[in-house]
Structures are given as structure tokens and as C-alpha cells.
Image 1 (spheres, rainbow, N blue to C red):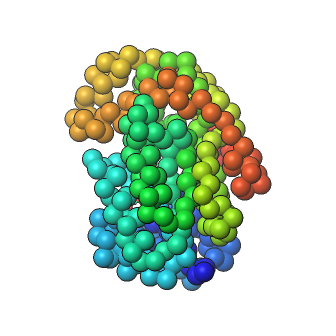
Image 2 (image 1 turned 45 degrees about the horizontal axis):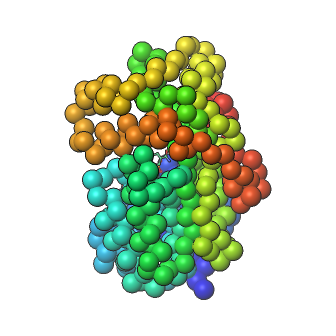
Length: 278
Ligand SMILES: NC(=O)c1ccc[n+]([C@@H]2O[C@H](COP(=O)([O-])OP(=O)(O)OC[C@H]3O[C@@H](n4cnc5c(N)ncnc54)[C@H](OP(=O)(O)O)[C@@H]3O)[C@@H](O)[C@H]2O)c1
């Protein structure tokens, strides 16, 4: 089995963290990116250029890889097609294992509409018969500060629902560990969460404390949430994804805290306060 690890998304927040961790461990890796000029500069690392939507280039970029880290694509009207094209190209290239970043509670009818894309991608990966490990990430702690409006208010239909957001650093640590010993994790699905269940009001309170200025949470109905986001003039599928990420919390679908980060990496996951202070 080849020890070459192919990593996508290395120009982004999560893939870049995974690539840096693998480089620190001295793992053999090839970064498969859309724009090589933006790939992280890491010693001894190969770089190949291929988007998910170009199967020939993507398969060529994976030549000789023993495992693929497939980072889910950025928001897109048909992410499942993009992911399926990448998976099929990897299988055609003979890559024996895929590690995929999915979403906590992914399901065909889950409230968070983007979570449905992840479910369909997981099923597509399984149907090809390739070895797999799924990393089902909760919402990223890193983005909690971005939810605050200019007026210091977080708005969304999350109600009093609880969730346990996870740091991209912890997801990257799990991924790096899995990628360096993929057979030990074959067929596993890890639910990656932070250490604590929080309501949106709790998130606002931690943000207030760390920032030293007030942040509050105002619950919205679904209709109010769609109306308050109309100003962005974004496509319907994108707005639905944003709104339903809050609604999934309100519905209790993310009310999960696990020890999977600890189990795989041997260290506890970071908290919201730790990520904000870092
Ligand atoms: N759990 C959560 O809360 C949460 C939140 C946001 C996103 N996500 C998901 O997690 C993924 C990773 O998060 P992140 O923070 O690292 O996102 P990010 O910083 O936006 O990085 C996304 C990476 O994917 C690459 N990419 C996107 N579309 C691609 C395509 N069609 N072909 C090849 N590469 C493509 C991007 O390449 P370029 O640099 O060329 O654009 C970038 O390197 C996201 O893409 C998204 O699916 C999860």
C-alpha cells in the first residue's frame, strides 16, 4: 500500500491545517489544489492542480496515492455532483481509501440542507466499494464570531437548542491521525464535536466575555430568518443552507457531544473560549 497521502482543499482553512500537520509528522503528501500559487509552502510536499469537476486531471493528480483526504467543496448548487465526480476519479485512479469531511447528523431529510449533500456523498463513496472513513464535523467553532452582526447581535432560528461546535484544528488533528494509519480507521464514522454543549445564548455570552463588548442572541422564526438575509441577494439554495444551520440547532439535531476527538488524537477538543483567545 502506497504511503503517499493526497490532500485536497489545502488552500483553505481545514485542508491547510491538515497539510501542515502532515508536514510536521514527515508524512509523504501531495496537495491537490485548484491554484498551486496559493498552496502552502511546505518542505518536501508535491503539488498538483485539479478541480473536482475535471475527472481526468483529478485522477492524474492522484496517481500513486494510497489515501485521499477529500475536503468537501465550498458552497455550490450541486455539491453532490462535484463530490461524486471527485470520488469516481479517485476510484478510477486506483486510490484504495478516501477520508471525507462530512457533517454531524447528515441524513437525506436532515434539517440542515447542506447536511443532505454530505449524506448523499457518503452513500456514493460507500457504493463505489472504496475504503472510507467519514469525519462528521459539527459546526466549526472558528466561525462563531462571524455570526455576530455589526450591531453585536446573533440572529437565527436556533431557539434554545444546544450544539457542540468543534475547532478546525481538532478536525485537522483527527484527519492527520487517520490519514497516517488509514487501515486502522477503515469503515469508521467519527462524530467530531467540541467539549461542551452550548445554546446560541451561551455562545453570545462567551463572545461577550472574550471580546469585552456585549454580544446577544435574538431568536428568529424561519420566516424572519429568510427575510433578514434577503439583503445579501444570494441564491435560494445558499440562503436555505445558512438559515437551516440555525434551524438544525433549534430542532435538536446537533445536540451531541462525543469523545471521538479525544479517542483518535489522545487530546481533548478545544473549547469556544480557547479558540477565540488563540
Ligand atoms: N462544519 C462547518 O461548520 C463548516 C463550515 C463551513 C464549511 N464547511 C465545509 O468544510 C469544508 C472545509 O472548510 P474550510 O473552512 O477549510 O473551507 P475553505 O477555507 O473555504 O476551503 C475550502 C477548500 O476547498 C477547495 N475547493 C472548493 N471547491 C473545490 C472544487 N470544486 N475543486 C477543488 N477544490 C475545491 C477550496 O479551493 P480554493 O482555495 O481554490 O477555493 C479550498 O481549498 C468547506 O469547503 C465546507 O464544505 C463546514
